[in-house]
Amino acid sequence: MVGGVVGTIAMDVLLYARYRRGGGEDPFWSWESAAGVVDWETASAPGQLGQKATRLVTRRQPSDDLARPMTNAVHWATGAAWAAQYAVLASRPTKHPLIRGLALGPAVWLAGYAVLPLAGVYQAIWTYDARTLADDLSAHVLYGVATSATVAALNRP
Image 1 (spheres, one colour):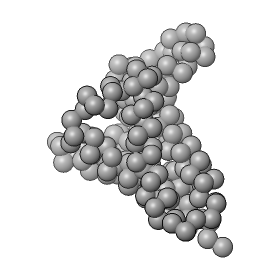
Image 2 (cartoon, rainbow, N blue to C red; image 1 turned 90 degrees about the vertical axis):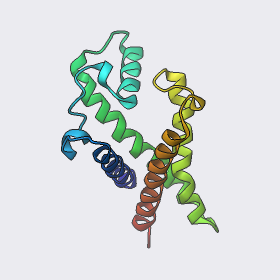
Image 3 (cartoon, one colour; image 1 turned 45 degrees about the vertical axis):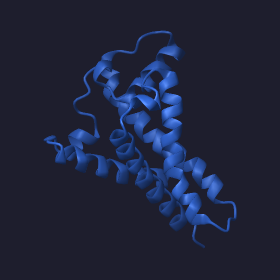
């Protein structure tokens, strides 16, 4: 899970740099902690997924004051959960650990574009333009590389 935290930080730093280059002005911590999320309408995909799961379990609409913490919780839990699964896979011997490490990010990226449209928080992958998909993929590749490198470093004898 430590690898997932490192990978998520790496990915978020890249996304924040792009946000700033695009004219964004929020300081890093405000951006990272979803300070602008005040209700479910302003929540990103992780928050919306958390809202749907909460509503499914409780059979009630969660209050808007949960939108920001839910956005953060699901975002970080997703990064950690993917890393935990990867760590189990990475514990198995392979002749090609680099390929396995490079495959993590694209696998996470593709899973998002498969699952999130079914949950109603993303559109189908073919509705996005190539630049959006490439930017998202490159961020996930960075997540995968940082996560796999951290898992490898932590598992050295």
